[in-house]
Length: 387
Image 1 (cartoon, rainbow, N blue to C red):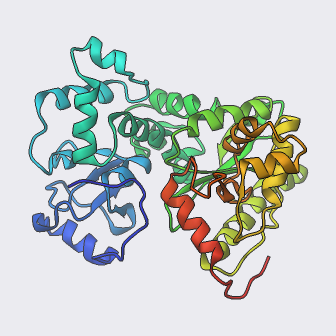
Image 2 (cartoon, rainbow, N blue to C red):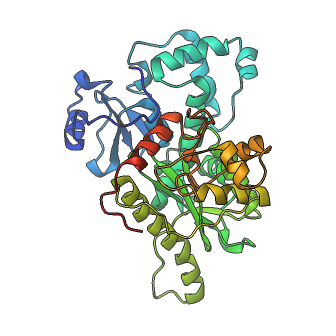
Image 3 (spheres, one colour):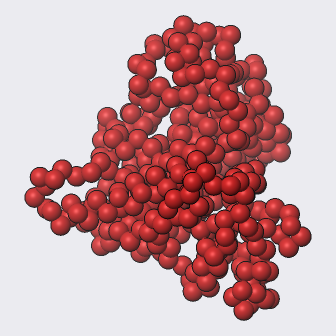
């Protein structure tokens, strides 16, 4: 079944209880209509899978293969959800085997050619059968493994063997390596020279986002499936002098002896809590202005551009030339476009409100269909705005 990558969600054909019942009954007639992610094993299955069934609280459901991958799940080896249309041809099986051999390594076109495979042929098959290119599939598999540690903080705050298994890793060392590859080493944040950045997985109507906050405010908000999310996280850490990144923990106990440290630890969590509430209100159409504290280190030029983005009223748009002229730099449209793309606070700093000089949509890291949705959403009358 061709899948789509975080497209606007259609009304669900089945509710979660019906999907869970189908999974328990191994209902093969529903294969391809949804996929079940098993939190305790880190795999995703088709409804007809013959494996032992998990408890309801350990299952979440996805409409596409891409969504399951971005949530950090790997394909089940028993029901083989990638084979819904029949067993893939030999060259596709070889490409998938190359990914699974080292899922955290980046495979490039040259690597495929060195293995006697055609990148173009493989990409065509992946687009047709899985709804995303080979590189997008691999990126979702690679990044999803690390993001799974953020989406389930209870399993990831302490990288133990049990936590590794819960996150779908074969070993504790693999668990640590996947997290460190994307977020940097955060196994001992208490000894770092700078306060950690807390990361939280946020579900939205347009697909999940990854949010980050430090003591001064929200410093990161990006779509999980953005192609450049790895680069953005690397840049974020560099801007914060290598500050460790940790999954947002539960609020510390009031009885903690280190009350100063406890208060400091609560601050990023409070920023993320406030962001979560304001995003919910934004998508509900009841909020037109974000007031959550933000902290976006960048070059002086970048900060000027981001400041201009924040001045674009909701429901309106500007071109790159408009931004450049407002800065007194009319010839700097290309530099403005780069700074716009370097924005690490999607929606909060509304880079989606920048369009081409001819009125057409231009590139957006969160995909153009999201940009159009956000602009249409913001043009609707607010249903009782609040900050």
